[in-house]
Amino acid sequence: MAHCLEITEDTLQGVKLNILLINGGTEGLRRVFDGHVSPPNLQRFLTGKEPDINKLYQKRIINKSQWDKLYPPVGPPASKNFDISLLYVLLRSICGMPAPVTGWGAKPAPTDHSVEGAVAMIHWYRNKYYGHALMVEVDESSFESSWKEISDAIKQLGEDPSRVENLKATPLSVSDCLERLAKFDFSGEVNFHASKHHPGTREWVFSHVDDWFVDRSSDSRVLIITGNAGMGKSVIAAQLCKKMKERDFLGGIHFCQHNNQRRTKPELMLQSLARHLCDTLPGFKDILTGQLTSLSSTALANMSVEELFTHLLQEPTNMMADPGKNILLVVDALDECEYDGRNELLDVIISQFHKLPSWIKFLVTGRPENSMFDKLVHLRPFVRVRASDENNEKDIELFFKDNLRDLCPTAPSKRMFIASLAKLKDSCCMHTISLNSSKTIKAL
Image 1 (spheres, rainbow, N blue to C red):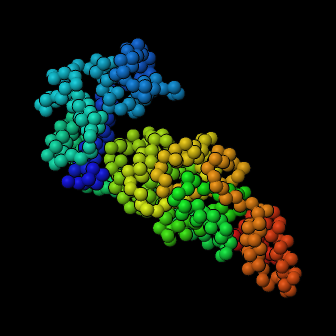
Image 2 (image 1 turned 30 degrees about the horizontal axis):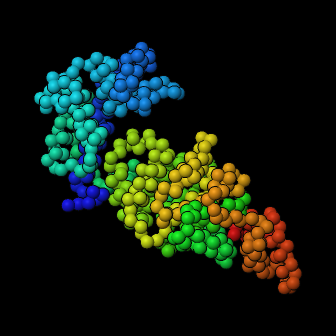
Image 3 (image 1 turned 90 degrees about the vertical axis):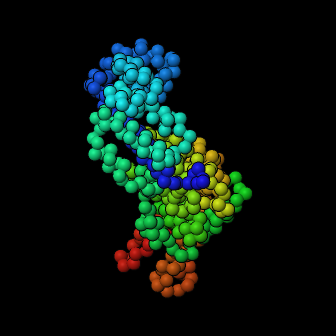
């Protein structure tokens, strides 16, 4: 017998039924409801029916989440936001739809081809396979009988029969569930920034990170590298990614970019980190796929950042055994992840990250003047790359020493020149510098 977290043929059949039921069934009931209440008249209709709907709310037939969809705090209501359960209650109790022969709440007879019978059939299966399901798996016999009854119902409600048959015939694999999640490829950024690293520099940072990362007894879960613009934080992050990948410790990476909206959306970042872990952490992919099979695309899209963190990272990793080593997630330029005036990923790290297994550690980079620094001050240790830091000045000295060999003919003058450059605060930026218009020095 397969383990409950393994993906089997029965699991994939259950996924197909959920797609048919939740996607097709919701659209079918919405089509019927819109026939009773046209979208332009929805708000006026709900306003007039508010006393009746409030009675359902007081009896807990409608919950708070559904109430907010009917009477949203901001903006008008829209039936596209109503789920099967809410549409069923509205059709049955508010729109005056007549009950099927078997009554509301009971499974209709397969021979009942009425609209109300189809509505009741979809709601009955919604409770069986989605609302009160114990497992996603559906055996072959149950799949065939359930498929026929659900598909007949949604076709009765106006669905194109060819689309139903296409869904049944389309092969479904484990990867189909994962394809719903965004995934960013940062190999180009890593290679670009890593190419700017000057050999021998930043070794003190790498040593500090390594000591922090390999210590499995430490309570420190997050390490923050802070420095002003141009201090080479992205170069450090890229080098650490390459080093950790070589040692099979790298779990996932994300390079934030303030002028790239997709990369600053916290929902997409969490999805991408989960996809990265599928490739780097053995066993994570199967568990995450099991998590996703119970979710429709709509439910996934409507999740808050905190819910996504729980569903995509917290729960799957907590289901796993300790791999016997720490795993590192890297987010570069976290201060640039602000979206719509908030940095929700930062908020999640602050409030939720401690819920992950102790073997997952997080390294982030950002500017010290940003609010990120104040919010994360309790998550020591920090690695601050300061212009006046002795280690930073030594890195700059080494950089100039290796790149200015031919500019100073005598050793004393060369040493004095390099030392004076190293102490210049602006020289810490180390971006492209032109010397006599003939020699260009790359970033640290």
